[in-house]
Length: 143
Image 1: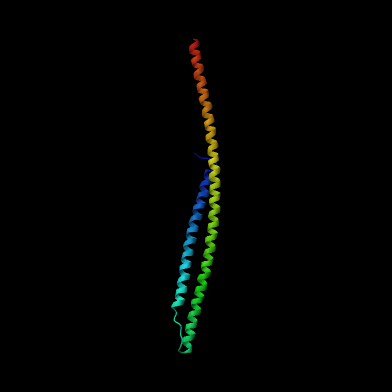
Image 2: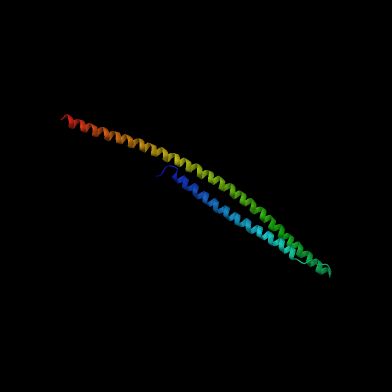
């Protein structure tokens, strides 16, 4: 049975499902960002430190360390960005779920009202049929 809210409920449900997919993607991006961050930290540990040699080796090692620190900083910022995206996606999903539930409730109320009116009409119809049958019986008995 359909009510005036049925199409709105469908739209809100689709919106909620879209938000769920966005949240899943945001969580996946966050996991990837964390993995990259941890990988870059591990790479920093793998860079050998030079304790003796020519100045060019020290400078090359220093450049390598600076480069790895820049990568770590980039990955850290990426993690922060994806955490914000996850938070935003959660908030949107929460909003969409509330909207869906609101219209689902309104649809349910509308359907209950329609069913109640139908039941009242059916009861009236049955009473009318019973009254007509009773009147026919009375006419036959009088004849």
